[in-house]
Structures are given as C-alpha cells and as structure tokens.
Image (cartoon, rainbow, N blue to C red; front, side, top):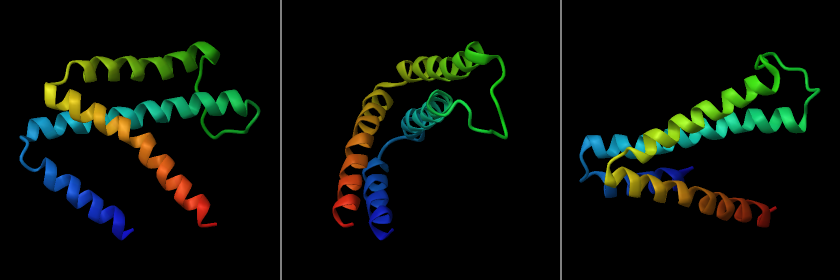
Length: 113
C-alpha cells in the first residue's frame, strides 16, 4: 500500500509542471482505457460463460453486445487521437506501462507464494 502512495506521489510531482488541460488529456487516455477494458470484460464473460445467471443482461443478442463494445472503443479512439501532443505521448506511455507493471507485480505476487 505504501509503495502505491509513494509511486503516485513521484508521478504526480513529475506531472505537476504541466497545465491542467494537459493533465486532463492524459487522464482522458487512462479513463478511456478503463472504459474499454470494462466493456471488453463483458464481451469475454459472455463468450466464456454464456449460461451464467446475470442480474443485468445486454439486450439485442450479439448485435447489442457488438454495439456496447464497439461504441466506447470508437469514441475512445476518436478522443485519444484528437488529443494534444503531450496527452498523446503521455497517455500512450501510460497505457504501454500498464501491462508491464501488471506483469511485474503479478510475477512478484506469484513468486512470494
């Protein structure tokens, strides 16, 4: 827990010299990634566990699911590609580092078991 707080503080201090608009641009990249991962998880869950009882279902069968997944992905792509240079570079770096950090932490967690 403390490591996450220290890492966040270092990242925030490095970004503090940027304007608010530039910081929001990077935030949009990260928020878009969260949204895309959320809709992709619904697609994967429906594909891997089609008979699972759900409290909420996406109507429209495959076409409805395709819309629910594709619409946010397309909107995110349009927003991200239209961002400023700092957001484009910073957001792309942040997205690229996500899987690297995930794998490193996952490897560390599994090796300590």
